[in-house]
Structures are given as C-alpha cells and as structure tokens.
Image (cartoon, rainbow, N blue to C red; front, top):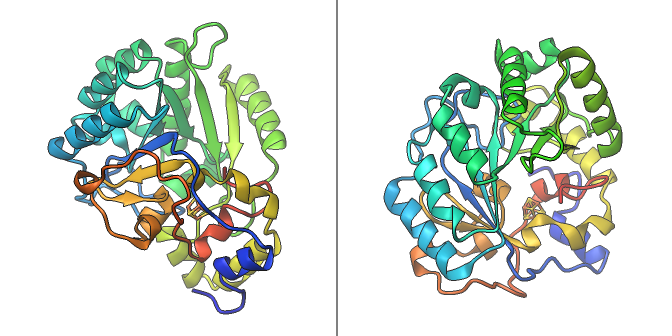
Amino acid sequence: MTDIIPSFSQTLEQHELVLQRKQAQILQVNMGRLCNQTCKHCHLAAGPDRKEIMDLKTIDQVIDYQKKCAFKVVDITGGAPEMNPNLIYFIEALSDITGTILLRSNLSALFDLKDDCLISVLKKNRVIIVSSFPSLNQAQADSQRGKGVFDKSIQALILLNQHGYGQEGTGLTLNLVSNPTGAYLPSSQKATEKRYRHILDEKWGIVFNNAYSFANMPLGRFEDWLKRSGNYDAYMANLYKNFNPCTISELMCRNLISISWDGFLFDCDFNLAANLYKGNEKKHLSQTKTCSFVDDKIATDNHCYACAAGSGFT
Ligand code: SF4
C-alpha cells in the first residue's frame, strides 16, 4: 500500500460517506483463474498455468444458492469461464431460475474453442456477452494481451455478429469493455463508445450494443507491472486526485455478491483478487443463510480508488 495518499476508508470519512450494502441483486461467480491469456493488466493474474477452477460440487452449491435467493442477475467471470468444462451445465441450470445471465469473455477463448454447442446455449438462454476488447490498435492489444489475440478477438466478434449478437432486434446483447494499456485513466465512456462503434464498423463491419471503459485495478499483474516500472505511486496519486464522491452510491459492491472458484464470499471480484473476504470475514457459501446483506459493511483497501476515480467503475 502506498503511503503518499490517505487510505480509501479515511477518504470516505473525510467526505462523510459510508460504504454499505443495499439489497443484493447480482451474484457474480468466478469460475477460476484458468485462462488462455496472460494479460498484463489482469487483476487476478490468471493464465494457462493456474490450477484454480470451480469444481462441480461448488457449481451445484452456487445453483442451490441461486434457487434460494433468485438474484436478478448472475454474472459469470474468470479467468476464461469458457475453459471450465462445466460452463454449459451451469448456464443451463441457471436459465430457469435467473432473469439475466452475463458471461464475461476475453473473446479469444470463445474463438479458440470453436464450440458451436456453447454458442447455441448462450443464444438459447439470451446470455449477455460482456467481452474485453482493450484497444483498437493491434500492436497495443497484442502487447497487453499476447501475440495474435487482437486478430482472434476480431474474428470472435464477427462470429458473434453472424449469430445475431449485437444486431438490432435479435435480443442478443454484446457489450465491450476496454481499459487503458498503461498507467493512466480511461477516456470518457461516451467518447470510447463512439470511437469503437465507428472504427469497428468501418474496418470490419462489426456491431455491438454498448462499450464501457474502466480504469485498471492496481492489483495482480498490473500492480506488479506498476511497481516494476516505477509507476505505482504516481498511478495511486492520480486515482486519489480523481476521487469522485458521486460514484460511491453506485459502486457495484453495494448490490453484488462475488463467489470465488472455491465457494467463498467477497464484496467484489477485485477484493477476491486481493484476498479480502466479504466484510473482512471468511465465509463459505455452504455457511451462508442470507440472501439480502442489507447494511452489511463492505471491505475496502486502496485499490478501491480505481472504482471511484472519474466517472467510476459501477
Ligand atoms: S474494489 Fe470492490 S469493494 Fe472496492 S469500491 Fe470497488 S467494487 Fe467496492
């Protein structure tokens, strides 16, 4: 933790703000750290050599929990969730008990699998695809995510468009998420979306529904890089300088519960990466009786500045 800025909790106090839970609406499920890529900005330091992956027993516990709680949204993330062999089983089991299912994809994993069965299950269940697409520049994207990833991502987007994703009137939603390739804050959501829409359409005829841009989390591989390159203190100072108190009421941790691959509860996927358990208390899904969590305290640390900088990470 850098000591050149106050702690996140001190800053909240200075602004007379309290970060407390509302009714939980979203269940975020991290299916593991296994991934086909080793992105430089990954807050989980996921990659092909990671062994952490959600097993069938934990998946069934999550399904039972969703049956009991009926969270409006189940948000499936990783690593690359496509690499979990039980993903289709999980989605099919969720489909009757969940209003909205989201799948976070790095696109290249979807492309590499070439799994028509997975794509038809995603379509049948109207699963919203939230895909990371960090840069429109091939060299930048490949240097951040790995050689050849940019081309695969483009091919995956074309494939998803062919299946109706991102196309008007199909009800199949394709959203893009970008993040800066260095130690700086993202440009505005509106500007990013406009640029992405124009260039993707002009060059490849690709369409999508929404594009979001978020700051990189000073955790995992990105934190290591910030420290190695001597950028850590300046990056944290910049996040602090851009602290926006208006973001606090809308932070995703207020209405989201995150479950790790081994079934423990966290306030969000970033706290999971930081090993900061929900409300600073280590608890497994199997010991959890409640679905609500209203007024529970949220565990924070200085990486939370990335959620509250500028227009925020909500
Ligand atoms: S990192 Fe998590 S706990 Fe911290 S502000 Fe962001 S969403 Fe909330």
